[in-house]
Length: 522
Image 1 (cartoon, rainbow, N blue to C red):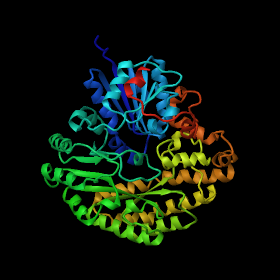
Image 2 (tube, helix red, strand yellow; image 1 turned 90 degrees about the horizontal axis):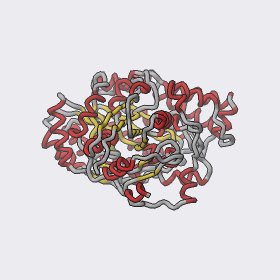
Image 3 (spheres, rainbow, N blue to C red; image 1 turned 180 degrees about the vertical axis):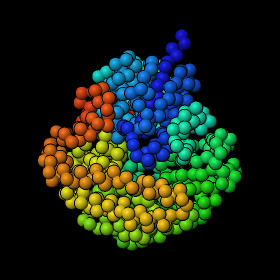
């Protein structure tokens, strides 16, 4: 008997709610995830009708999701979880079956299963086929399913183009095509979701075909590599680009490790059109393997990393350095003072500061943090690495920590720093982008509010100290404003979650890799 042809809607939640700032308008369409597009290709190959929606914060989401749907796939980071839960509730009320994938599904499957019929971890085409074949409601708790490993190959740019093209059309000028050459990570950072996924390169022949196709479709295209760590098999990447991309035809952006960015590699990257690199520094007191500093820490590491970043800037116009604030290795004022020193020594790099966050079961360290009762039930909406830290700091009180964060952020985003950064940057595009990113200072305004609440609002202070599980009203109002008309669709209880679900699940039920098909049919 032939399978019923389903009407499938795929929703990629790039952001959690309406956006207004210039940087979001320019960059959100360029932040579309690859896997929702991949799932769209697989669903069509399996004989179903697909409607793909990429929500960037400038569309009317309530209007976008109207229409008949049998099966809804949502891809979301945890910051968009409340939006995803509300959308799922709406589709379920219309008779649709709903599926969640992406980082939130991998990090918080127990919570997501309360609001979706299927919650998918690592996903391949067989898993998608199994879900489609069954396509049945699972309530009150959805099925948690995962493939044994990442797929060996993914549909390339040519197969995904029908989903890529309308998304790029939303970008006013800079249009970045998402590509990927590898999955997983060779490093073992205890706080990272990719550290527990084995590094796996994809076929370089696919990359070759994608680059040839892309140059036929767009004049001087930009490519954003979605590899967790770009360039592990560096020579093979460069050889492919050398073969099919004439000099200057394609511009590339990638996230990589300082350990891979030697000067010979930088020369090859410049020759092959790389315009932006995003290396992770994370901490001055750990992760020496990634930063190529070995056992060096503190001031010695700052000087070595700064020299390295300045070398990169001689070859690559745009460099974003990524830091994590509040790690257990940090104590006192020193980590923040060292970061300010780095900003002085490497003024051309744009710094981003992430707050230490334990995303559910994303990383081994998270279970240890839950065992010591340090993880807080901060609503997912705020878990965007900037708005909240859901781990009580080990060596700081909350007021001390926020005082340091405010001092550092204020320094990095001050007009003297912005102007010095612009003077150090090469190219008008780099100068403008860095100014556009820094000037709104919404991060600084939010941190100032939190610091004020710590002194003036006991509900906030008690919540952050772990002395109360009652959500402060100021947080609830913020979520309600962002969700807008979707607020009424948010399921009861969906504002909060069990922050120790990973620990509790491991105590009550051993984790097993069940065969996917039998898991669906049971």
